[in-house]
Image 1 (cartoon, rainbow, N blue to C red):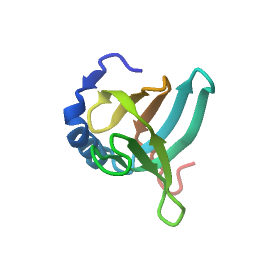
Image 2 (spheres, rainbow, N blue to C red):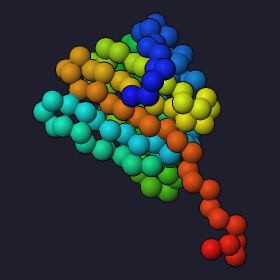
Image 3 (cartoon, rainbow, N blue to C red):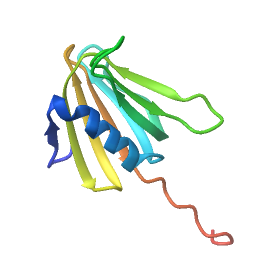
Length: 125
């Protein structure tokens, strides 16, 4: 996790996830799960961020979903059950951020949001 991470209070999760979704939509999202049982496991690499979802009420009350993928391919949804803490470090606000979500089960999910590399100009190789 990057230095300067700020813990988001639970009562601001909905607002914060909506803002992150809007601000980082389409950025390259890499999702890594870190847990005692599984070690480190990358579940998505450099996929366009579609958004974060947090529903404080309903059938999956309190859970967080991270949707990534590109148009024309199935979106992948990473489901984080029973989160207990959310920390965000905007290393370059609006350009790069790390979102760290800890679950009550002891697993953590790190979502790294980065710009996609720019393509070279045509004829420049």
